[in-house]
Image 1 (spheres, rainbow, N blue to C red):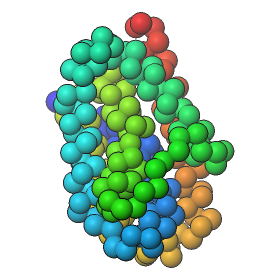
Image 2 (cartoon, rainbow, N blue to C red):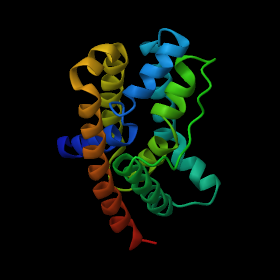
Image 3 (tube, one colour):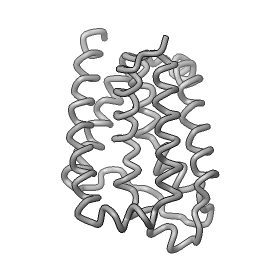
Image 4 (tube, rainbow, N blue to C red):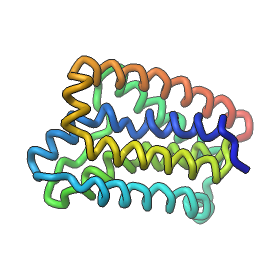
Length: 189
């Protein structure tokens, strides 16, 4: 059922992929452009997307004739690229910067619950139980809400250099997780 080790691993994996701390500069820029960011709306919309993908993502894959291990291998490659982005500071995945829809686009999707997050959730299903993934999602939603409510305070505490260090650190962790997911699923294809 529940495994603290799995919840911690899933939680850290999603934390690294979502990269809410690394997104603080983007969030602050959006806040300046659109005014106040609704932490509740952005968190709820992100949560609905992640939980929906956890619950029906596998059925959707079956409909497309894709098995979970193949999706996990493909997802591990995406996660690896996201890790490289974080470490090298090169943007492979471009995000839409339309600010008319406020907290939902681009904050909830694609910044928080984007393709990397949804791919990671499906990739994690190959190695972890659904309850543990759900718990990891809920922990991250709590962190997302707190960060969105505390944007200005976090920026003052960490500073630009601190935010850069956090982003690089989680980039390396993400690379290691991607390699592990790839390695554990490549033999099952």
